[in-house]
Length: 439
Image 1 (cartoon, one colour):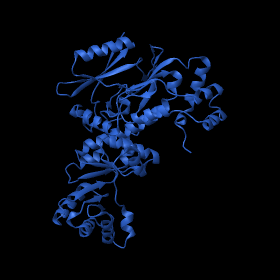
Image 2: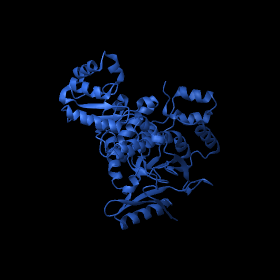
Image 3: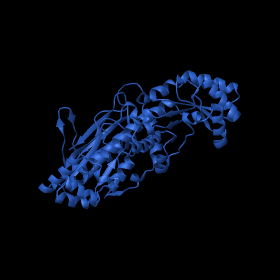
Image 4: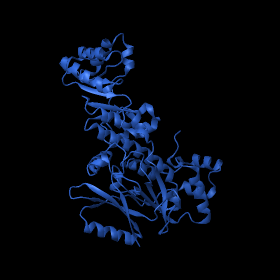
């Protein structure tokens, strides 16, 4: 039986809640902030992904009677804490970067305002979703850039947890992939799905040509043939024999993909299959895709590298208390410094539309908001990034942004980054984050 959203948390969230209820501090107004101190090595930007899932989790957060009984039985809650959880509903406010925005070190991508009790319980599930989805989306975005407008299919389901696979498909689609092999992702999120046959189908039949003719009988000549079960050259010949010059596509899943794509294109053209697409797959990441840029590849299939964040399986996001009852608070340990106070983020742009920096304004609410309005009035190139996504526990219009809108937002936002900020090579973040504090 699947656990309620309220159990997707760490035990210490409940022990903190219990202690705060006992000493009377649980209902103190607080502000928590989600940000990262650094981007994964070699990355120039992060991608905000998973926000819609976070908002769903917040509005659904809670536990049922059986779970409360279990929590009490294992000593995770006392009577007062159990009573609070039984009636839990988040009634605060959530502001943040809309899904599909980009972020940098110290960008305040999500701000949760509520009582300590309301907000502390959300820490684990918020970070679990955002760290996973943002990592996948950043890796997928880099692959889309490397592909240079050639489509990429997500096919990584068998390389990760069965539920993670569904949400990885969503994050990859947000980042610009065109479809997924995962049917649950298609059903859940409305993502286009695709897929034809694996090596097993070819091996099932007495020979490759028989398998391909069977595939055509079922799916038509426009289907995609996996041609590297045996000899690729013969596989292409058999695909053409089975489908004729209307052959839709061939897929190569192993070997030196660049060399094989060149040979395949030459052979297909010689067979009169000029419009046949070449699909390549097999442990592709952004660097491998970039390396195939000069090859006659039409479509990429990416799997393992996508669902593990291409070497960066987490976005490194943290959820920190930055304000207590209107008073800025900050962690000041030597290696983990936090800037106190609720913040508003602006992004500066040249007249050409290219972004130049991110400006984060902090201070008392009245002074901060006045400073932001003054800056926006004085500079046409400034744009406020944070939007209110949830207010009084209810979704706002901004909080109802669709997946397709998030996908479009990311595409448009990436066009505003300096070209060097889209490079795959190691370097500084695409934009610097500058803090302005008003007293």
